[in-house]
Length: 284
Length: 332
Image (cartoon, rainbow over all chains, first blue to last red; front, side):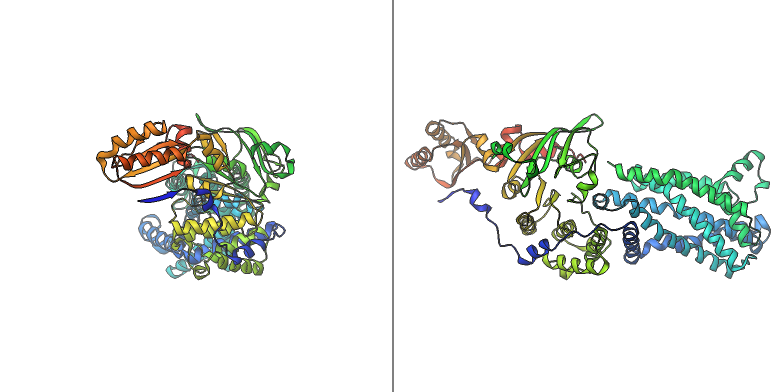
């Protein structure tokens, strides 16, 4: 028969605490909070590290562009323009716009994942300029978009794409794509903060991007369309960008086209960047 | 302990909150919580899932706006001065608040840089913490490949890159094995010794018992009891006698004896060899056991102790903590 009188209070005594632990706690002095630039760069380096550790996330900017370009060139080339090489001259700028526009949604998905895990809460309790969390990630996304663009153009050149605008024209066109995509990303970060799951976010972006990219001048000249549809196609932001990109790649770009792209980008950023930040700060 | 409070100066408080309310739809997740937590102490929020622990913590950590009530953290108002609060607090959430795709050292360096360290200082600090937390061997491994205990430790390490004045720990040991749990407890004790105030939530009565200076039992968004572990146990009243019999057929005779000698209600264990009764007087307990011997009732084990926090919870809510947990739903 065993007898033990419970005295649980006495068990509360400290177990031996590691000196190193106490030392580490004691040396955690608080530095001055980082400025906006350093916190943005810290978040950008996080995004770069994520690419290093999860390289498969680069599929969307490497494999997608190649598939899209090959598929649409050979599928529609003969039917629409009579020859794939002729069609490529028309299609490549447009399909570049379409591809990059579609991969912008991954920005929202990454943010949505952060929220569902706890790291979002941690960032929000740090003494930092909060937008840097998103801007840092978006800057790295711009690198991803550039990669997608370069891959597509390189493949296009192999297939017979001959941009008359030369290197500068193509380079300038890519800059327009990047500005537009950076602005478009804010829409997905906004939705990324609203919707519950990655799935519903994919669904929303699909519903928005599918009509926008297909009912545009990416694949066909708008004057082949019924009049009522031409109105939509011509005012579609994707068309505005595709026209400018096509123009500069082929050396016929105008400043009006640039102004159009910048205006659309400015409007998207002005609405959705503050909205994103508001939701980020006040997310439940 | 409680009566001393009114003599304390206001600058002795880490947290003072009155009437905190948070409503989600129709559900009052937090329903009028008052809190006063002294600097340098550990306050334990004890309650089942869905009781409102996490919601309360998130409000106090400036992550969730309050619907009613007010709070001051180190004298800073929760609503108007949240930036000042953020400079003094740190939060370890219920789910790992780190990037699982990054390695341990990359995570700590990221947080250190976001705290304002230079790249070089961030690295020094990250290595120091990894060593102190016994994670140096896993520094270059992705956190998703860490065990549960290692994950928890890197998470807490990330919270104390800059030693906070107030640390929120949301269920720091849920799902950990006993050894990892003890490691986390040691870390918490070391932090408190260094002067950090800790507000932790737990479903484990033992954890609150081990760590917390003050315990608040939270249930349906309200604090239904508050005090030290001893005070809470005393509020339930008397001590408890547990008896384990050798033969199941003795159970009813043993019950009669205990009822007579202790003059208290006796609960029968489901295994039909154990009995539990409330008992104040050890002399009466000794008499009962002597009576068992006279009547040849063999006892394999017995213990006399003050009620466990589980019994406290049972008395306060009419349901045991485990039952609560099953029926409770998670409210974030």
